Image (cartoon, rainbow, N blue to C red; front, top):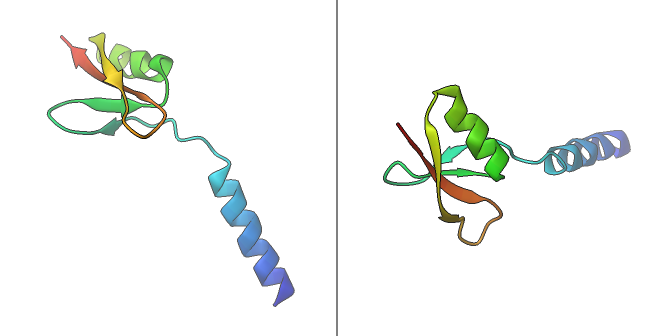
Length: 68
């Protein structure tokens, strides 16, 4: 019982300690990334230009659009 509880706690803490660096589609083609560098890298994959729309509300991050 003790080992199972410790293992579950360790897995939960490890999952919370990893920063989310994925890009998430919000609305109307607007995307959200953790940093501007992540946003630039995402747009660069498709050879498009990064246009920052603003700061993500109530969360850390940046809202952006990839323009052609």
